[in-house]
Image (cartoon, rainbow, N blue to C red; front, side):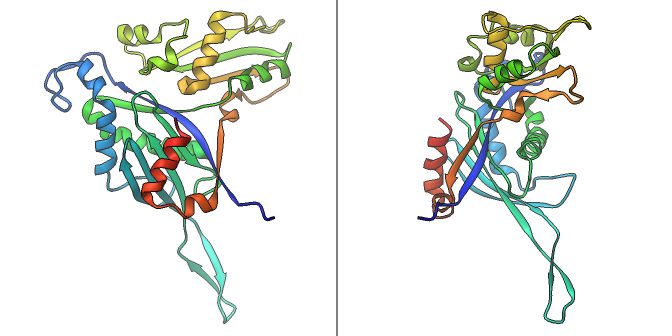
Length: 284
């Protein structure tokens, strides 16, 4: 029996935050308070998704096609132009137009805020496409004094597997944390990033651990603060990087990003309405 070809997706979380806590009544969409703005952030994103006519990309030409904006599920294909050459019957080399599409699905429910981005398609690295979405949405969100940030979701055990792998060698751990707007992923956080955001206007907070040059770090699951930072980051709250003796490059937990695979025939044969149901199930 021939195994069905799979389409692989990487899973991301996004958070939508006010750019500033200094809110001016009546501006940025006519909202009367910052609380009202936060309450409407997801409907604003849907509105922006519907009105975007062009996505820009500094490294090439791209096109897009919106497939759905129903039931909080936003689906589109983004194609990037790639060089493709073929030989003609006269044995000459001919350049032909070739647009490689990547499928993107967003669950824009305020208690979910997840995004699936197709792997190994037009964009070889899904982080590139996540950044493209972030940049283009932010161009429009700034009209409402909002910003969006996409972060990979990964298995929390991936962090602890790195700790075990480089035991006795880790000299630095850097927690890069996005200020939260979802209580269901930040309730267990032992550092009140929400309060810090409100009092200082911080969007991204770095908490860096450094060992003495003759020693190494010894993080433990029993440490409630470290454990909560790992839990929050793994759910799409940020990235964790580390330095280890003998390793030149930084080691990032984002490399352990979650992957979800679906039979190609299920995706290719689905109507736009069916795609909504498929992606809603995949991004609960």
